[in-house]
Image (cartoon, rainbow, N blue to C red; front, side, top):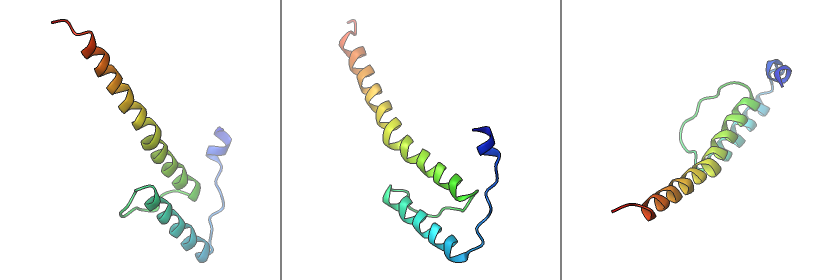
Length: 82
């Protein structure tokens, strides 16, 4: 994994490819509810990695945290001493 992280891909010099990637990236962001301005950072794979992380974090972890918080409040409320 460390070797993959340190390897440097060859940059794409094809303008059509770059514009197609940015267009697809913009549409994918919008389809998951990430609207607005974004800046191009890193390589294409790094951009996709960050987007995937954001989507998974919101779709899975936030739902899990919300359910866990609700269960904790319910349990505490049920066994509350008066």
